Image 1: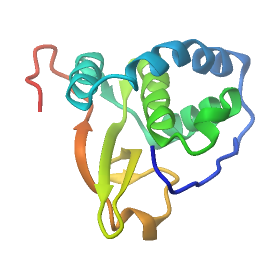
Image 2 (image 1 turned 180 degrees about the vertical axis):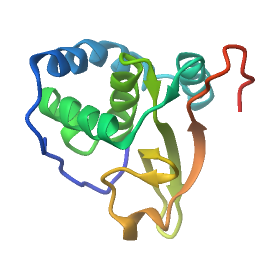
Image 3 (image 1 turned 30 degrees about the vertical axis):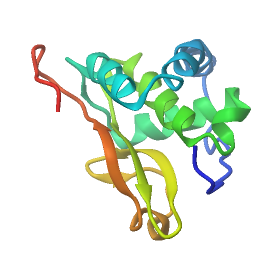
Image 4 (image 1 turned 90 degrees about the vertical axis):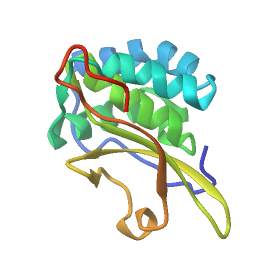
Length: 147
């Protein structure tokens, strides 16, 4: 969880299907984010296996969906938001680049999603301070090794 609060609101009109997908992934998200970091990374890597890279439009749609159905995701719980967005994309057979990292001086933790190495809806000035500690990207190979 980050002490940096970037309140989010849905920016586009969502279909009932997208809202439902976001709502249905939330119980899994809340179980996943309670895991130890290495276990969380392992579980997300398994979910990402065989998934193609998500495009920016899908990731933004996922962000809009999860923040519209969950106050936790819309608020300060960046790990929940990033994980829910990744799982939303997973329901479409895609996967974004999921990251959790830290900044020092002062120490802060944060989680975010990227497309082609660019954070989605994260302030550029904020992202220059964070170093990814855990990362899970898309993997089109079925037997791809864990990174």
